[in-house]
Image 1 (cartoon, rainbow over the protein chains, first blue to last red):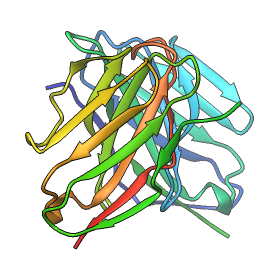
Image 2: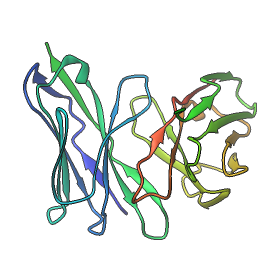
Image 3: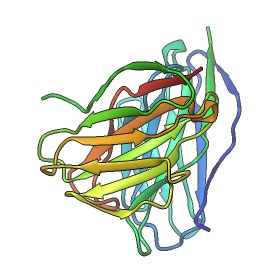
Image 4: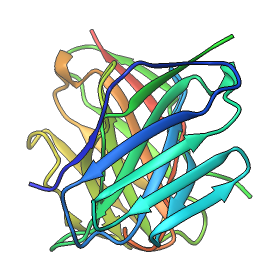
Length: 112
Length: 115
């Protein structure tokens, strides 16, 4: 069974701090990874994709990928109350099918 | 450009009735995915299409659920003889190609309530 695991949280951080969200996956062959943000009552919104080991930065967001250790993380710098949401990690499952496996998400609370 | 659209946004139906949920993907996106999300839960994969074909229907919960896609564009998810446990948000997503190399974009969802 291919799995994607995330800590459900809630992860509480003060405004202005760095929020660190982690995701581990079981399929060593996975090549691409996606982070989504989901506000309560809304649909998931793509934040970042990452395909290569290392860091990828986009504004206040940094995705980090370590394929050897099978984890991908999302850092949010200068966290704002508006960042409070559930963050979903998605990994494509490509063995015999082409679907995305989603983690259950980490709920982030940024405290003003 | 236009994103993924879904209709209706909300649907309330009586137990035992059939419902149809519609998804209109981003123009040019060949892959289309259906998910279900129950309150406070994660995303549950239902089915995906590549063009008009559905290579993986493994997530459909029962034979009351079916989906089709026509013209490589619009998709309809049909639930027959709805049950209360079918109440959830049904999300559609599309991508330029199959999972792996392409990013997936979600529609706003259809909230289904079965009374």
